[in-house]
Amino acid sequence: MKVTIFKRLVISYLVIILLIIFLGVYTTLRLNRLNQIINYIISVDTATVKVVGELTDTIFTQVGYEEKYLISKDQDFYQRFWEIGDYVKKNIKKLEEISDTVEKKNLIKKIKKAHESYISLFEKKVFSAVQNTSDKAYREYKQKKQNIINEISQNLREIAEIAKLDRDKKMEMASAISLQVIKVTTIIAGIAIMMVVLISFLNTRNINRPILLLQEKTKQVAKGKFGPPVYISSPPEIKELANAFNTMCERLKELDEMKIDFISHLSHELRTPLTAIKEASSMLLEGVFTDMPEKQYELFSIIKEECERLINGVNRILDLSRMEAGMMSYKFRTFSLFPIIEKSTLKLTPLAQRKKIKIEMNIEDNLPLVRIDEERITQVIENLLSNAIKFTADGGKISISANKNEGNMITVSVTDTGCGIPKEELEKVFEKFKRIESGWVAVRGTGLGLSIAKHIITAHGGQIWVESEPGKGSTFYFTLPVS
Image (tube, rainbow, N blue to C red; front, top):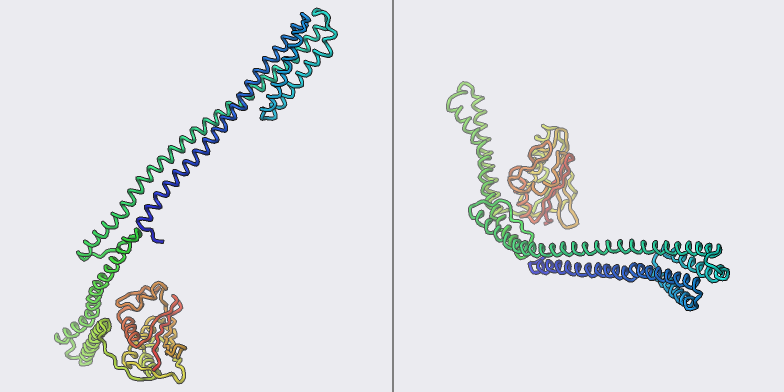
């Protein structure tokens, strides 16, 4: 998916908006939680402490009226005792309603039960027997009552302590939530600000930097320094411009390399035979072998062979140049491939025999005629066979076959048991002046032979390709249309 400058801006600011929305949602949820904790503290813990205090006061007030009544026998005190008792029950019930833990509920049950025991002690067991505040029964009553009141007070204190501890914990939790909200808000706000700055910087840089690269690359190309291509992945608008620029640079580089390769190859091809001719001529001029006619004959033979080699090399270069320029002339006539293949095989058999290489021919019977330039197709077959011999180890095998396929084409193949070609190098063997490294064989598909072969087969309306596996040999194929 191509991300344009406009889309980048939209996506970038959308991310910032989503960050702000996330911050708003997070803050709302945490503040809502904080509000729940505060409400809980007010409605439960603080209320519990308040009710415990009120309950403590009402119990001691009831005890005061109870004592006043026992001493004075005043019915008003008796009546107030029972009224205060109702308040005690209401407060105990209220405490039950707001209790939120099992521990609190158990303590409230104990308080309720102890208060009932106090009322029962006052109403049923002691009151009827008390005649005098100084007798033994009264003192026993006072002791039992005091024990009950102490138990109630102790339980109330425990409830108050639990409520205070719970309140303190919730206050700490509320404080932690507040700090967390402040921290997260600060961080996200900082991130949002940094993103705004970073996005602005990156968008400006992503537009400015590619333009500067193209500007610098243009200056280098103008000086003849091609270097690596300009890789610009985005934005798409500038990427398309960079791709067009790279295509132009690649074409200019190819033209420059072709010029360099041509000069380099020409120098290499001419230097060796010229050196041999020069040395042989010098020896003849110096009369080194004046008394040895057979040696002189050898030197003349060397000069002749190197001259022919020189002529052939120049012709190959000229042929390739004419083929690439589309100026090569072909003499097309209808021929049978069998005699051409047979003649080429017989011509190269002595070279194969020197390396004890066996050449097999597998030509289909009644092979259809083809319209070809006999000389050029012979050149292709001989080139493929000579390469196969060159790169096949002693004692190997070469097979040349020809058959008609379903596409009204004749397929010719040359298979060897040589060193093979690495997979990544297969497409390079038909390029001119390419040197392919292949295991123990230093060079594969050198020179111009395969490049010329490709031009010839293409001009005949066919195709040429190779299949190979390192260490197991190669098979070169080419097709020709049936006449």
